Structures are given as C-alpha cells and as structure tokens.
Image (cartoon, rainbow, N blue to C red; front, side, top):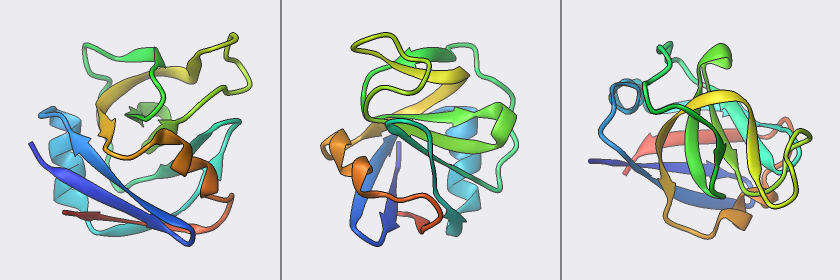
Length: 123
C-alpha cells in the first residue's frame, strides 16, 4: 500500500502500511506531530484518527509491528516487553488493530524518549 516515516530526535523509521480502513485514515491525516510516550519497550503517541477496532486485532504481536490502539487514538509500536508481557512476547495493553511493520530493526524504537516529539509524514 503506502508508507509513513516517523522521525524523532535520535532516529527515523519507515512503516510499511497494510491496506486497512485505519491505515487509510492515518494516511489521510498526515503530516502531524505528537508527543511520544513509552510503556516498557513500547512507544506510543496520539493521532488525529478515531477508528473502530478491526476484525484481526491482536494483543500479542511481533517486535516492530505497528498497531492502532483504539482506546487512545494512538499508534503503538512495541520492540520488546511491556509491563504486562510474559517472557519473550510483546503484549499490548489491549487488542489493537495491526496496521503494518517497520522496515528497520525494531530496536531503533528504543532511542525515543518520553515527551519528545515525533513527526509523522507520508513517504
């Protein structure tokens, strides 16, 4: 489908989006800036998008999966364990819609810090 670039002070990553209703809404909303939040080894940030949970939503995903957290109108990008993960898994706070995957190594997400700004734009 399409791609997004997420840029913050220390790094930039590219998201390969799947063709889903939420991904199409997200593409229509770019560009935008948002403050980053972290939760264990996950970063998340609010978006201008409000969307319903998609049918294939999941709570446990692979590192580098790009998800939409409906309850927070936010993108969630895990690279490792969160406070509720079992060993070896990326567990989101609740089921989220899966929008895509990072092109780069997921551990680049660890360079993002709470409160810094992420820029989201199409590629």
